[in-house]
Length: 129
Image (cartoon, rainbow, N blue to C red; front, top):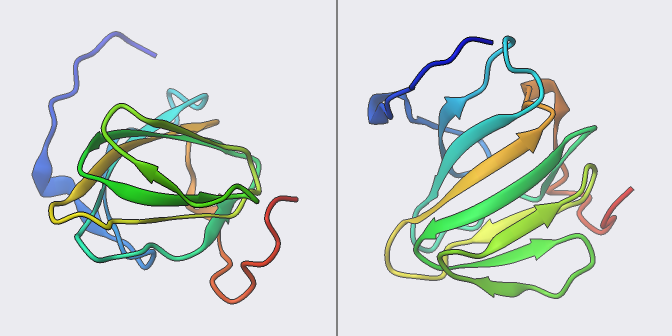
């Protein structure tokens, strides 16, 4: 990996089947140990239940408010500055219960790859493997 500064480019944002918008900030083969994405959830939206195989995820809330469900924990209200730790294979979803976009960083180790994502919307009773 070489030293570099990456400028934020909002035109790279894309919508996912999970019901949120993602901008990959840092996710390359040259830096396989970690990825950083900016996630945006619109007001009134709850993402789909999902989990990541062999990947630990952390959410860092930047703007807005939300309700987080992860593993077997009770749903908890989130505000800017809060951090959510999500072990590999732990079910998760987040709801934007505010009136502005909920924006957070999703930091994955190792880096996120589409093949680790599992939609468990129809089988969300299993909390963590």
